[in-house]
Every structure is written in structure tokens, then in C-alpha cells.
Amino acid sequence: MKHLDVAAIKDGSVIDHIDSKSTLKVAEILNIQNEEQIVLVGMNLTSKFLGKKGIIKIEGKIIDQKEANKIALIAPNATVNIIKDYEVVKKFKIVIPEIIEGIVKCFNPNCVSNYNNIKARQHVVNKNPIKLQCHYCERIMSAKDIVLI
Amino acid sequence: MNFKQRDIISIRHFNKEELLYILDLAKRMEQMEYTDILKGKVLALLFFEPSTRTRLSFESAMKRLGGMVIGFAEPGVTSVAKGESLSDSVKIIEGYCDIIVLRHYLEGSAQLAADVVKTPVINAGDGANQHPTQTFLDLYTIQKTKGTLEGLTIGFLGDLKYGRTVHSLAYALAYFGAEMYFVSPPSLRMPGDFMEALKDRKVKCHENESLMGISKRLDVIYCTRIQKERFADPVEFEKVRGIYRLSKAVLEEFGIKNDLKVLHPLPRVDEMDDSLDATDFAVYFHQARNGVPIRKALLAAVLGAIE
Image (cartoon, rainbow over all chains, first blue to last red; front, side, top):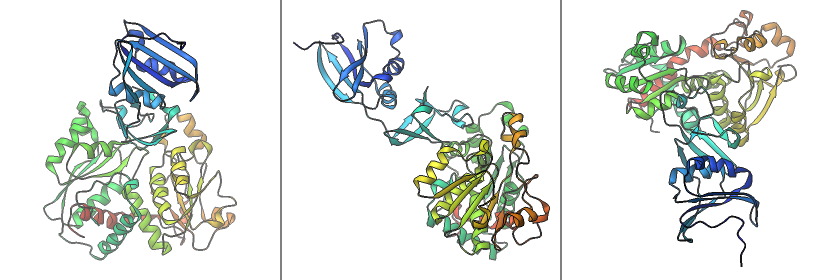
């Protein structure tokens, strides 16, 4: 019988194949501290693909597109499994969209998007490693510059 | 080539053929000093930051083409002082004009304006980001004084961190196989992402702290003012104030090509000595005058008055 490092959930979402070091950031994106049902977080689990991986299981929650886009920036290899009655009913790899809107704060303090209630907007110019170009001020951000809104 | 109703926001939005098209158009515009091809058209000049050359050359260009000009040079006398957002301001003003020229201290402001109005928007400088019409006139000046834009060796000197004219010009010159030397104190070096963009485009780039040892290779020196107004910390400004002072004697001492040309977007403070003015090296006053034909070309092309 297969041994599970992190217990199964009945209904909800499982975010798997997170780069281990990014696990807590993904947890932050998903705002797990405010979840009322079971949340399981695993780090440094063995992975054939990543060596070590992180996994987050959230009972009763279906990941939405905006959350998936945010996760994609932090953990581009992550996969999402939607669980119903202990069975995987949907499985998909998170994909980085071409344009990111309202998710990442422009790192340029003089950018107009940081004023006047303007929705931040970036064009994804490179997916791996991630590089985002601000639609407004044209500055290019890499992973180290990314601050999520 | 279709420039009709097109926004002029960033030099990154233009390819080499489009740059050359506007330079050719400027040459034609220089031949016809006054026309009425923009008769009945209204240009709104919205200057949220001080400017002399850019604002007046746009005004001169529009009037020489038979058009009219409205606008302001001091935001303190507008509804902005009451807290109106930039988006709202431009949405209101688009109803009063056919084209908007905007200068604003926030980077990306011209793109924001272009996104919210149907009227074409020309960026006349957005913070430390871009100043595309200055780049067109810089290219025009280099082309006229050097006879070509191809394969030149250009030295950029001064404030390369906040110098938007440098950012735009370096990007444009990449199309013409230029080799570039970026000369600045360490605290005012070209932003890393600009350097990366140039290297991605296979530009030969060098970073130096002095013209010593490189001046003999340069066809053009593009000198810029160290912009006190861009420094958050006055102590940091004091560390670099007056660090470069180009003069006839300095150039002769360093060794230069006889046909070197010195450009400067002006205004200058103390980075360039008056002793250069009367030499054949100095083309900066000529450069400022080139603002008129370039802006005539852009206004006429964007308003669809010429092809």
C-alpha cells in the first residue's frame, strides 16, 4: 500500500509539485491562515521531478484563476488537483498567462501604477526564469523583485 | 508607413524603418517652414513638469503647421491641484483637442493616458523613463552632423540612471549597430534592465567612470546633466555634483577624433563649459533647434496630414 506523507482530503484542492522553498509563499497566496477547514502543508517531500517538493491540501476550497495566476509566478511547476470524495476529478498544470493584472506591484516606486488606484499590469516577457515588464513604466522585474498585491 | 492616430509613447514601440521614416519627414518639414496642413486642429500641451525646449518647440511646430495650441505649463493652476486624477484630467481634455502632448513626473503616465483616451497621445517625458520625441531629434541631429547613423561609437556621459534621454537614445541606436560607452559615477550607472535589453540586442556596451582612454574612439559624446530634482537624498546628489566638466581643454587633453560631435539635451548646469560652444564639436544648440522639424513631422504624421 502506498504510504502518504500528507493525509488525504475528502473535498477540495491539492497544490502539488511546489518548489519546496516556495511552499510557504504559496500558502500565503492562498491565505490559509483564514481557512476554517482542514489545511495540510508538507515541505521537503521526496519528488522524482523536483528532488524535494512542497504540497498544500485545502479541504473545501476550489482554487480560482486569480489564485492560480499568482501561484504560477511563485511556483511555475505546480499542479492543481481538484478532489471530490477522495477522488481527483480535475488535474491541471498551472500556466503563466501572457499578461498579469492586479497581482504584482510594480517595483518602481515612481511608476504611475503605484498611484491613483491604477490596476498594476505586466507583460510576461520570459516564463522561466520569470521576467515581467510593467505595461506602464516598462521596467523589467525578475523573481526577486516580485511583490504580490 | 502609417502613423495616423498612433500614440508616441516609447521608442521601444518603433522599428528602424519607422524611425528613419520620421527623420525623412523632418527633412521635408525643414524645407517648408510654414504651411496650413493642420489648420483647424488643436494640440493640448499638458506639462506637469517644467520644460522650455520641449513645450515651446511643440507649440512652435503646431503653429508653423497652421494649428492651434491650448494647455498649461503649471499644474498648480489646474484641477489637479484639487486632487483630480491624471486619468480624469486627460479624459476631460480629450474633448477639447485633437492630440495631447503630455509631460508628467510619474513613469508610465503617458501610457496610462493613451490607454484611457481615444485622442492620440505623445509622451513628452515621463519621469526617468522615456522621452521619445527627444530621441527622434537626437537621431536627426546625429544623422545630419555625422552623415550617417550606422556603426557609430557613442559615449554617454553623466546621469545615466535617471537620464531618460539616454535610455531612449541608446535603445534606438541599437538598431544602427552602434557601440556604446556608458560613462558615469557608480551611483548613476545605466539601470540593469536597460543594459540587459541592450545586451540581448547584441549591442557592444562598456561601462566606465571616465572618458580617459576611450575618448579617441568616440564619434559622438552625448553629455547629460546630473538631475538634482531626481535625487531623493540631497547628500547623494552632493557626492556626484560637478563630477564631470567637459571643456575644449579637457577634450584636447584626453585626445579625440577631429570630427567628434558633442550633444546635450539641455539645459546644462556645470557639466559642459562655455568654451566648447564656439567649436565645431558643439552641436547642442543645433540639436535643440531640430526639435521643431521633428515635432512638425510627428504632429503631421499622427494627425494624418502627410504621408
